[in-house]
Image (tube, rainbow, N blue to C red):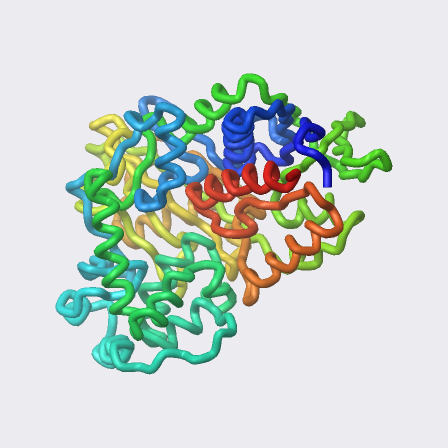
Length: 473
């Protein structure tokens, strides 16, 4: 093992939020330890930020990638504070608390007390028209069902069906939860996606009881953020990317060029070969690229079959801006989600200008529609005109809106959503153990591993920085 003094050069492959967070915390921790580091970020994109992209147009603030984050997940709040951005955070419109679910082409308000698709208040759930009486009774059986004894991983959909029944899983939980991963709940790992569900069953003997406990904790955390479940920045999520960029003045960038290979050097350490022929010497490497790209880099040096088990799904979002007077509707909520049984192209629609008051001029309306999931990759491939027409037809069917949009913005995020398969946690542990033995000093992290949300990626970037620096001891 090399001495601490010998490690100076760290290459980060990937300039998204995981890579930027890794660089930020590497510099901070190195300063605390009195170390001198040379850090280089490599990304084939022309600019930093990955999928984060805020567009300002005609007075609108439009997110073309992720649009917000959970306020209860503290890594992003902590990073915002460290970057001096705490005052830029903004909450959702307190007057728009409802979320709707489409059922038989009619919008039904989400019953009060739902937590990640799980009922925690019996009265509103029983009164809802979303679920049949037999479905409601089946869901409430969760309060009396025994705890599963097996410690083996199970699918998220299988777990929910076992605890609250197929009807609640398909009509409420799936359209809500699948939006996070754009995946089929019957194929996603429970342990990798929602371990809190498993903990609820084991600790409280009931998913409903456990989620009630979690809801109270989440409410307490949200109260510190003005009671909002979600937060963003007034000028968009690119605010954080710009701040991270500014906070890394001595970090080198190689943008617009792909990392083409990693080579082990006889003298020790590595070289990262770039597509333009440049080679970067590295004592340590952090790979935050998607699983398929990471596999291409690492497979010449080590078996990475676990990375090949992670399928990626493509999605798109279509933003539509309207004149409020012509639009003709007002909203009392944040939007609606669409179960797959409804047969629409869109999987959800956010009433953005109502949910986030800073995103639109007061006399305009902004909608954002989501397209594509693991079982529908064809809608994402539609040509622009056909995709816009399909989305507008869905909006007309649900909301009756016939007004012509002022403009539209399409964002296609190809192979952007990693699908965590059954046994994902164990596979990633095995992979990292093997890499530690075969490629000491190389760490893989990011959305492919332990959470796809912005706070999860920031947490993983911070963890990567500590692991890379500790490994030299």
